[in-house]
Length: 280
Image 1 (cartoon, helix red, strand yellow):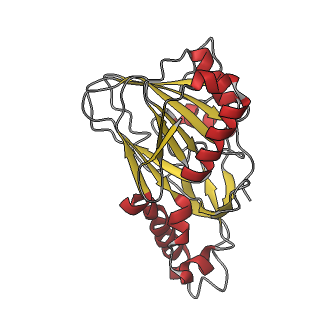
Image 2 (cartoon, helix red, strand yellow):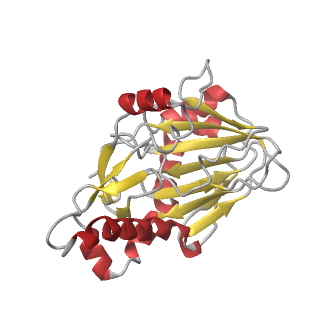
Image 3 (cartoon, helix red, strand yellow):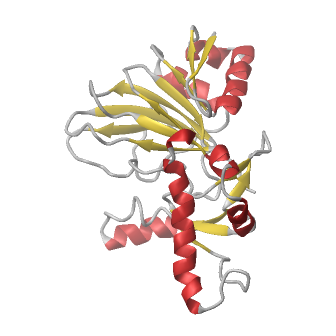
């Protein structure tokens, strides 16, 4: 297996390796997992693997999760089909952490390209460890104990009829996570707010609020500033898809953005998401 780092802070392309083999080899999987923790997102080309091999490799990391809105392959539970054809679907063209609206957000994912446009449809990943590391020290002090609420209702649920949206929210109520989480395997500090984040839950204290004007506007401005850190190019890697290309990412330490510049061309992807742990 050959390793080709792609940027200074994030991403590496692997060659001369097959994920079907990695699904069956403890040693090969362990090597890939170690590289994932180091580079945070890995890319592979020419992975002509079956759906069963795709699922088997992803399950090496842990149990797979389904999605309450996007459909899965009926024969391979946990293999979510992200098929974009004629209609625009602006759910992924923002910087986000998969499943941030879950009590246990997604640990990571294995995404394989089935069909993609000749031009467009790239995906961007962001190193949120680096995003936290380069925050000004005064901002780090302000957010060290902050916690934030995240929700599926205002994203996937927004386009639903009110009754369906309320049902989705009832089944998946808002959750609370630390604004700065610790990676359970590397110990790294991670900036952990994204597009699913709606507001801070413990901002209104004497340290942060002098007058009422500091409360909602002050908190909203800080949250927007923190969310904007994912858009800094120095923290990013951008990947151009081809059929049978695969991306593997650590969802705990990254965010990603699916660039929606290919309409009306089709783009068909299949993703196996891995159940994560409770952030701390």
